[in-house]
Image (cartoon, rainbow, N blue to C red; front, side, top):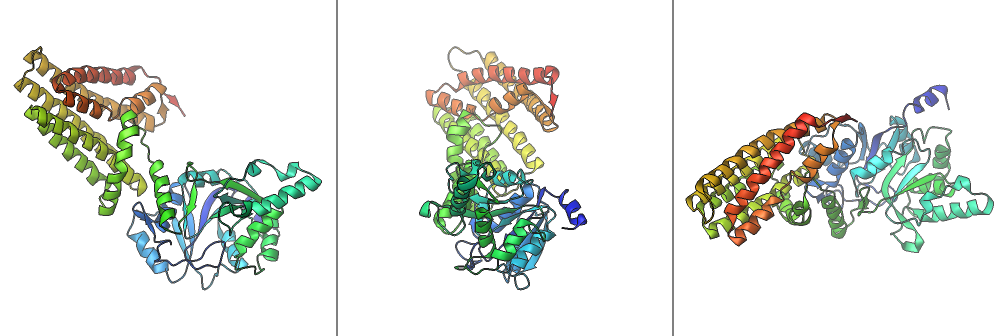
Length: 486
């Protein structure tokens, strides 16, 4: 290896590049129909697999992607242009000139990468957590293979710590386990997902992996690609590291071959949806109901901001029902307010599923939530004043309503300021607790309980006291909380 190549490799261990294969499997010569039921254009949760791969890699900080494509390139270009913005560099590599069955294609693409490189197949779906795990392995000199099955502790055992026969047994077991072309559990083997990490300089001429690619990659065995033969050969020599990626973990990978696989990926995506501002009701009720509405909104192609406005309108209609003052109207208002809270979860879910998050969207959600809360408290105060229940004075009712509205406004500005501090890196444990455990939608279910009991005016009294305490808490934290940088 030349001195310049060595110098280049010492600065390029970071995972900054990826190779996306769009119409062929990474490990077999099987053609994947681009327009078929399980290919790069398969839509899951509002995006195609191809878009989801690009945007996930982009979100994880990769800077360039080589797309190994054939006649489907123009279709894929149109899909990218019509979706969320893709800012990483895309180089379209024609398969006619660089066929994936030729080992020189992989050698050339890996050499053009600026560091360690992720290889992704056309049917692969994976999480941001998986790519972040692979990026953390950028210093590894082995191939890194992502497995969809358990290795029974094999991954935790180092072949370099074994000697003689025991080391040989380990390598044989590793080679039998890391097999690209088997189903999970077949013959005791784990299926390798079509996500592979090539180490920086792994295919530079003279390196061990390059020698394996030249000697074993050219063999033609049962339709396997050079990458499949390389993985098996490298495993036999102990030059493979493995990552277990189950869909029930944050670092997951799956391949979409049919509708069942697509459902599995969709479930994994929905499990990953969790807001920082989430209470008990959100976790156990709202988040159980919101996916049904989120799927509808994705089918209708509603933007996250449009969903925020819809949730606000439902909340304002609920306030109008509360203002009528009757038991039936109050119950309908409480149900609508609970529906508004469920749909209020959907804007963030759609944004995260489609990579459409924006600072403006987050602020709009916070502003309009506050508008709904102010309207609810004002409507309850008006209804209680018009239909004064026994045991309450009109002045007390009006005072409670005014206190709840004023405290809500103060809390809004306080929470906004505290959140800005956290985003700027000035962390505080007390502020984290306040934002994550207090500023939630949980009280929507409390409103419903009081409405069923016909005691909404008494809820207003409770809400006024709680709003004042919360507002004072935000003010105290603004003045006295000692942030730490980090």
